[in-house]
Length: 358
Image (cartoon, one colour):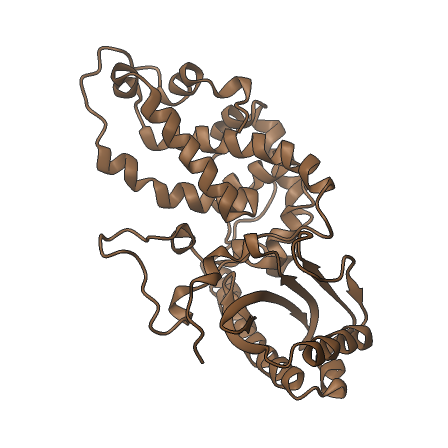
C-alpha cells in the first residue's frame, strides 16, 4: 500500500499531539486503549472503502505505523485515538484514489463487500472466547450507513467527498478536524460533505450529525424518533417482501416474481471475472424474472436462505453448503427496485465459513 506524503510518521504525530504535547510527557500510552480502537477503525474504514478486506489492511497499516514510532513519540501523542483515526482516514483516502484506477480494470460491475449479521445465523459463534470478535466482519456495526444502497451511492462520490461526508455525518467529526485529515480548509470540507449529502436519498441518510451544517434547521428528538420508526417499519416490510420473492423464485413462478419487482427494477451482479455472471445490469421486471428462472433451472440444488445483509433483509444462495451468492435489496412502494448480487468469492469470505442452516 502506497503511503501518501502527508502520512509520514512525524506529521501524523504532530497532527494529533496538540500544542501542549512534547517529548517531556511521561504518560505511557495504554496498550489496551490502543487495541480497543480497532473496532472503531474497522467501522470507519469499511464505510470509507466499501471493502472489508481493504478496511482490514488499512487498519493493520495504521497500527504498523503506530508501533513503528519510537516510544518517546508515542508518549508525545496527546490522543492516540485521534492519531489512529487521522492516519487510518488518510490511508483510506489514498486507497480510494487508487481504487478508481483498479476498478476501471475490474471485470463487470464492482459492488461493495456484503456483511453478515452473526445474530441471524443460529448457532454461529461470535468471537474466540477472548472478548474480541475473531472476524473483522463482527466488528462492523450494522446500521443505515452500511446498507448496500447507501454504500453504492458512496461509490459515486469523489474520495474527498466520501471521507468528509462519512467523518462528519456518520462519525460526527467536526470540520476543523476533517480539514487536517484531507488537507483542505474547514469551509471546503463543509462544501464536500454538502455535495455528497445531495446524492443521498432521505431514507438512506445516516443519523443526524451532532452539529448540523450552517443554514439548516436542527433535527428535533420527535423528528429523530419518527425517522427510526419509519426505518423499523421499512425493515419489516422488506423482510416480508424478500420472503415472498424467495418463495416465488423457489416455485419458479415468473408471474409472481414480476409482480414483486418494480417495472423499472435493476439487478446488478458482481463476479469479478472469477465466476460466471452477467456483466451488465439486467433491467426491467420481466427480464430479471426470466433470468432468475434460468438460474433456478441451471442450478437445481441451489438453496436460498433468508439472512441479514448489511443490516437489511436479504438472501444467501448456497450450493452444496457453500455460499455462492449474497443478494441485497432496495424497495419502494412495496416493490423491489434494486437487487445487488455479489458472487465474487473474494468478497464472500465472511460468509463462506458459516454452516448451512435453515
